[in-house]
Image (cartoon, helix red, strand yellow):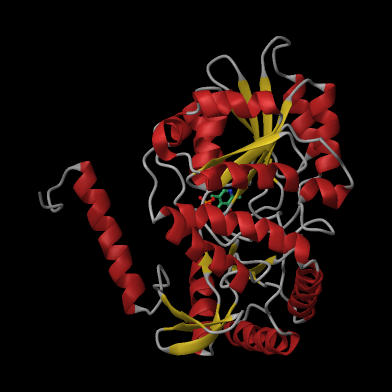
Length: 401
Ligand SMILES: Cc1ncc(COP(=O)(O)O)c(C=O)c1O
């Protein structure tokens, strides 16, 4: 089948092909650039050039950690590379149970369940918990996997203004008294780097009888003195009903999880479709994730370094004149304006060996295209200062600052 007819599908595919070839012709195509080598904590080889890595989710610099690599190798020796199927049939290995116990302890909950990715976790958990006749309220800037979970659930889907507690309260007041309601937010917003006002959300959920689910993809290892996430950051305990997270960012593996009360986890284990109908995490990845939670607790200086690096990076870019929105974390948006300017910034920064990537519309509103820069515990302050200088130099050339 050729996509060159004049039906709707062919028109969409062709229009996209034109956009791609224009982007390639302008050297604006930054999609899927392969990292050829890791060189130390925060340097990578891309297109044959060594660059400073400012686009990594490995917030604590744990990718390649010797302890984590060693347990992954040992898990392969013990269990091989695959499982025997889905968890509920023969796929559950001892390492899966261990990992779930580790997560529950780390998140200070009764139990935890893992899935094959963070995306799938949001999709399956939201659509298992709520459905027709229920209501789900989601922050406007929540991750796409949350949006997709809400849409597939069949529940009435309402978005509240970003981190706007008056709007959330207003929307909660509008719901029918007897309807089940779930409020969902990212802990740290993945495009803006700001933190949800958890104490107020918790208060509103209590007042209006709503369950609370928080996605901690970018807060585990990032927030809280010991990296346990957003509750620790705000000095709260057992405030979140459904603590969701990924094993693919600070935790250098793949997968997603939910931690919470035993009854909730039992329910998800027996009812959620992605648990029942999709293969278990590979042994090496489960073992790596399990060890990573332990490394976070054993090496708290990584969190301190990440905090120092985040403040240095945000402060440097702000004093150069960039708008970094309301970030206080390792995710630092560097606003560029139009998509074209974000592409130009990326191209020029990469030509000067700073590996940053753009985020453009529709992922962010038009006119708010940006570099979505990140720092990690593995960056050296001198390298970061050099990167700030380069980004600022490019920003001046393009007329952003
Ligand atoms: C906030 C948030 N939730 C969920 C996910 C999905 O996680 P994963 O990449 O592990 O599927 C991401 C990943 O980008 C994310 O940023």
